[in-house]
Image 1 (cartoon, rainbow, N blue to C red):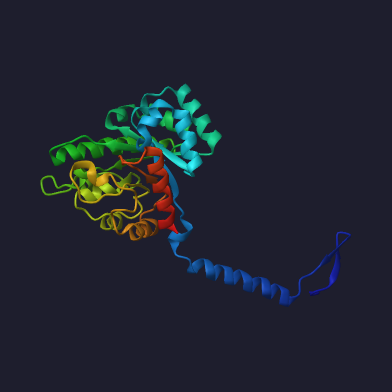
Image 2 (image 1 turned 180 degrees about the vertical axis):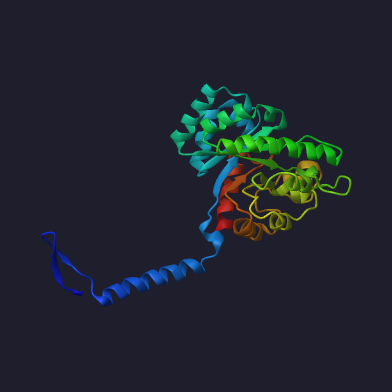
Length: 297
């Protein structure tokens, strides 16, 4: 073989690489592979930041287009719709999708009350229009017995089969009560154990803390299932006053939690949620976004 010399191939001149050139290229490939291998697995998994729109619920109710535009202008790449969105018509969902596309935001997921789950095909249709592929059950109600929570898990499992057939996923969002033992067991443990691993366990950090549970331990116990998290801060206080703080002002282990969730939890979405604050809602969620970006470095 001729190295580093010009040869004629199909009537056109070509230069053949020398052995040293090939060695340099091979070395570069090896270095790149080595560097890539040295990067922790979660570094390549950069979750999308979004806003749970319950945080600006009154503003959304009064002016949905204007609210979405303001949220986008703050720098939120995504949103999660909640509640009565499930009553929208497909035609209206298309109008909302057009607004999202216009401001460059994505619908990452939706919150759906348990009453919507018998109508999974219709919810799937709305989510497909909006661009979401994650249907979260926002609450399972308040079952007083573990058998009631097993029924909630069965409802989720049935919905998950339909969702997966449509290329989507279902999930469950916890409140504090799911981490408070019932008959000696936490309802979240029952839901996790009685649903397939394809069912997402959307972790609401604030309510987990309020119940006295450790969110880091929960993530480690459920690898790959913490695809989505609600970043709601909390510190001890009467009733809901414990939530009236900005993200980063209560829980002291946010960075550790986010690192564990990215490394082992399968984290894809980080959703800021604020139940209330002395500041106006728009200012509140904008400050929370800035604090989250600092946490993520």
